[in-house]
Amino acid sequence: MCHCRVPMYLFLVTLAMALTGIPVATRADEFQLIGARYDVGSSPSRFPKWTSVLERDVRQRAAPSEAPYLSAWLEFLESQRSADEEHQLDAVNRYVNRIPFISDLENYGVYDWWATPAEFFSRNGGDCEDYVITKYLSLKELGRSPDKMRLVVLWDQDRQQYHAVLEYALNGGSVLLGSRHPHLFRWSDVPNFHPIFALNERSYWIFDARHRPQYVARPTDAEHGDLVPVGP
Image 1 (cartoon, one colour):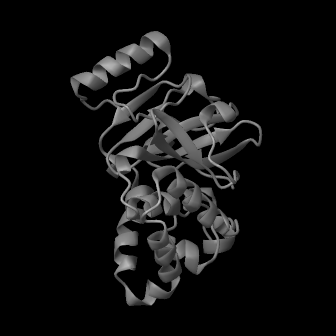
Image 2 (tube, rainbow, N blue to C red):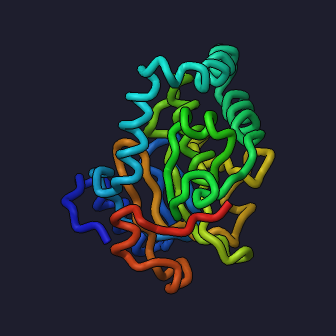
């Protein structure tokens, strides 16, 4: 759990959550995760897989050797630049989801690898967090604020698997972009999804174990970004 000092408004939000068990919006476009308590931190550097993928993405975009794998993606994004927000979300979700699922073990020979867009497209495949990372960076490239997005690692109770989705704050609520869903959906559509932790470039969230099966993960795993395996 997070023990960092937080601003007064976060203290008040946390107090409200403790009393109600439901997150309280702090602005018009706040994430709305139904029925979950969480602690908020402001140092995503505690998650080395996340910070590594962001750093590699910057380097790879500047490398001429990666240009062939990124050009079609960047051209697609340019074609969506003038579209409205919800259309961009849907278009990005569909574009990324057309890439085949491939496990990290098959793709990279390791149990868990968080891939950049260049790695994802060059290998023409990835697993669920790779889809989320590419969607996150696609929307950021289109000018959408990282404050409106977060990668959520969760436990899928129905499939008994780890999974990851992109949560996007929209119109006072949240929509989700997932590799298993062709359309945007909401937390109320997936009561079998139990969040473990979430990340964007400015913050992280560790979710209360009382709102997910205790065997899903140890808190130290979540704090170090080492929750594996993450399923399709």
